[in-house]
Image 1: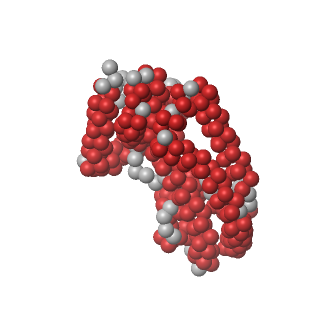
Image 2: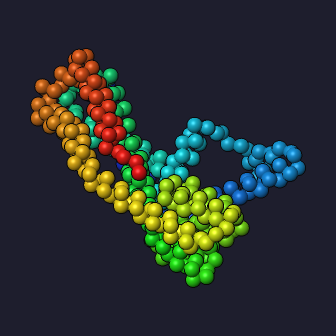
Length: 336
């Protein structure tokens, strides 16, 4: 019965591999056109909603002559959140494409886990419960790998953007002293700084060029970046826009404050380096030793998976490991 599982896994891995190769080689030419069509639909929907609000009538579904498609609210919310993460990570993928990539990675990990464990533990292929557990666990790990990379990339870009705020303030202050307007100064700064801050500033300039207000564009910039230092700058600019004042001097004062915060964060990171390294070693040591023993002595360690007391011990160990990681992170993490 279970002889068909390797064949199904091979078929799934090859199918997703060919599909991904097709998307990389031939799908790029349609990516820009597809996003333009999505933007046109968004603008058209906004105009229809505005017209319906003015007339007081409800907007009819399927104004293009097509029947409304079946909607899945949970999946749509997931794609919306995933789309925001992809935008923050500066990855040119649609949520559906990234979901397909994660599903393909899940199939590949299931196939690899089946090949590695079927030789060491032949009983896994004969026990339906263990086989289903293996498929679910390995598929979950494979599906999470692209999402872990996505979170890591977002964190890296946020850290890089935060390090560029000080240079942006210095350039902005110099351009304002030279007599340029605020919007023009931001445009010149966007040409001087590098990505990812340059991309966000260009989006800010684009919003203003399309007729948006400065305050609304600044609020959108704050929502996109979610950076504390840049948020402080945006709040200062909004206050100056309402009450007036010398914006160049305000930028210099904020720049000094941000530089002191960066210096203090560096000192704290240096003082807590030993604690963080100890945390990494303590957290990784049980996992590495367990994998080594599991690989060298499969008969000895298989009791943990076959006996109920062993399974209970594994659950307690995993819970203790997660609790230890959270406690160590809470102790080492110091907010400035």
